[in-house]
Length: 359
Image (tube, rainbow, N blue to C red; front, side):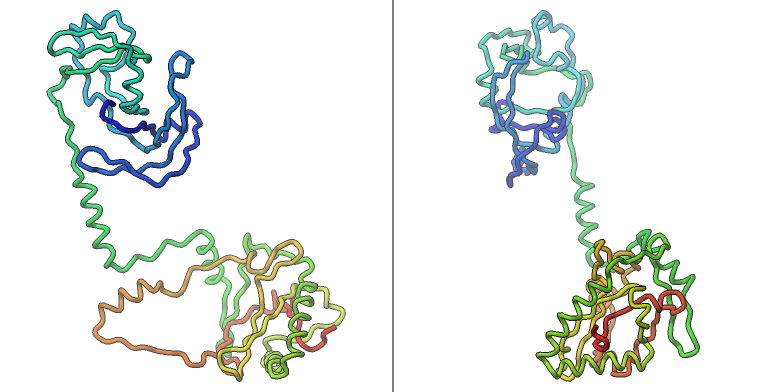
C-alpha cells in the first residue's frame, strides 16, 4: 500500500508462520480517523523464491481490511498482462488480506519496468515479487463501493448503557453448586429443639482420609499455647470459650485410645473488637501432609448473599428504607449455633486440640 506508513500482518497469518508477537501498547488510525487495536509486533523477513529480500517489523492485527477486491474484476481484453508473471495471479478474485506492506517496502521493491494498457486497464509495474497491477479496473457487478454502517454496533452500545440500570438476573449455578444444593435438600433434617442437621457434602460423595492432621493441629496449638502464656487475659477467655463448647454439647472429650483416629482442625484465637471477647476459629483449610484440607474436599454451594450492586439498585426503587445493624450476633451461650453435623456419620471424626490435655 503506497499510502501506508507501516507494515501489518493478521493474527491468523502470524500464527500460521509460528511468529510470536511482542506486546506493544499502541493503535493505528485509518480512513476517517478510525482507530484499530494493535495486538503486538513481530520481526519478519520478506522475500520470494526462498530468498529473503527485506527484514521488516510488522504490526499484528486481528483484521487488516475486508476482502479485496470488493467484487470480481472484469479482466477480458487485458492482453498486455497475458504473458507476465504476476505477483498475485488471482488478483481479480475477492479474497482476504493477510499482509500489508508499507510505502517504504513498496518503493524499494520496484524494478522500473512498466507496461501500460488501455485507458480502463491497470498499469503493470515489475517488482521483486513479480508484476504488480495498479489503476482502474471495471467490476463485473455494478457495485463499486462497499458501504458499511455501524448501526448494529451503536445499538449494542446503547443497549449496554441501559442495562447498567437493570437489576442483574441470577447467575446460573455451576455443576458443583447444583450438586451441593441437591445434597442439602435430600439429606438435611431438623430436630425437636429446632437445630438443623446436615451431612458433609464431600466431592464425588466419598469421604476422604486425612494423614497427619493431628500432628499439624498439635503443632499449631503449641504455638497458640506459647502466646497464651504471655497474655493471661486472652488465656482465660480462650479456656472459658472451650469449656462453654463442652457444656453446650458442641464437642466432647476423646478417649486416649482413639486419639489417632479422625481428622483434627487447628484452632486460632484472637481478640475481638470488643476487648472482653475472644474470637476462636476452627481452621478447616489447614492441610495435612498430603496438602489436602477439609474445605478442599467439600462441595461449594451457591453464594447466598446479594451483590452490593444489586442491593444498591433495589434501594433506589423504594421510598423508605430500614437499616438494621447487628451489634452482637452470638452470645456466650452460642444461641445462634443452630446448625450441626450429623453425629452418627461425622461427629466422632471431627476433632480439635483443646487447651486441656495438651500432651
